[in-house]
Length: 229
Length: 49
Length: 232
Image (cartoon, rainbow over all chains, first blue to last red; front, side):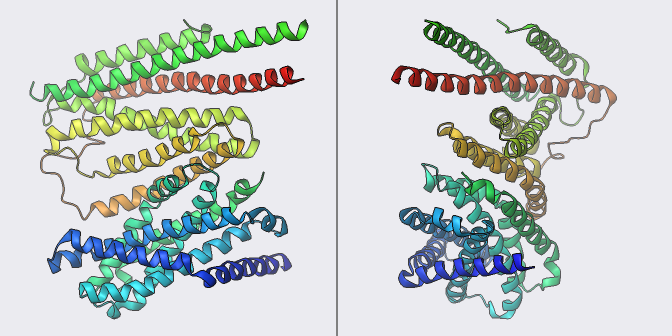
């Protein structure tokens, strides 16, 4: 039992360290948020002014913005990591190395949650969609979805850390593998916006849930292979 | 025999692609094996001198 | 031309099975009443698709074995199966639309299997790109992880694409491609022979490509040895 308490403590320690670093400069969050907003605005121009069309497309736009924000955030984080070169020291100090993965994943997820919290009101205003009606259910979908994005994203960002074409490889790996999550999340969000309830989208929620569990398990099983020498 | 050209296009693409790939692999393999034997022979000669 | 007798027998078996398959497809299998002669693309298209899946399954198994045993041979097998898999994947993506155009009236209809094939193409091309940089032991391990992750994702992708498809307009004309019903035992026999020919080809290609990967590795090791000898 003390093994898992130690694990949690180490995860929290790593998480707090990353968050503190981020708090000082707020680089990662700002770039993610600004980029997400940019994507949403550009999409708005690309799609035209028809409000009905926009309503149909808004959940897709939001999730695409989140996908790109994830990639961007991970790349910034990875860049900062390799500049500091602190990874080896951290790994030595860890009892269970997957604590590093969990910490990074949670950090990434927190940034994403923050991005959503900040950009959803903007979407509501610009696209004239009332998100407050389904805000609780939306919360569930977003949390589950972003959990999946963070898991897959963090896994690949650690793999890609040592490759040469890092900027290209991360999206190339991340986006196709996340297709099931993207499809399910967009459809679930869309259904909620139209007025359906959580009960109507259970199969999509199940897919997202299974995706999360499967990839979390895989990532934890495989993490040692990534960092060991 | 309508749509014949579609059928023709599909089969010739697959056929040509597979042939080209198979032959390329065969040739590359043979080439590498020869190079390997060559190099190995030279190392033998040098280290037994 | 062949390196040894097993190799030669394999090649002969391939030649015979392919020729038989072609004969059966064009001279024996009945022409589909609804789709006409274009339906015959089905034999090569579906055989390629099954071979592709099998190839990616081999990548999956070989990747796991590589992570477990760290043996270079398994890594060579994984890489080879992935490359061959991408080749067959590309063929599926080419023959699919060629079949689709006359049948569906459109080049592409986001048919679930074809869409799954497209996503797989992206994933395994990324796998090959990940491996392009030299034979660094870590690179092989990362690729192995992708080999496992990619294959595990397949059922998830399949399920999500099918659900997503229910939103899309169905193609105009006849039934969808992929598994157009095999109507008679003659068609079934033809298909089985064709599939067999493709699988024989797959194993032959796998053998050759793995051999190439291993030779390259041996050459590298040898060159390293030579460098060491020279600098002594």
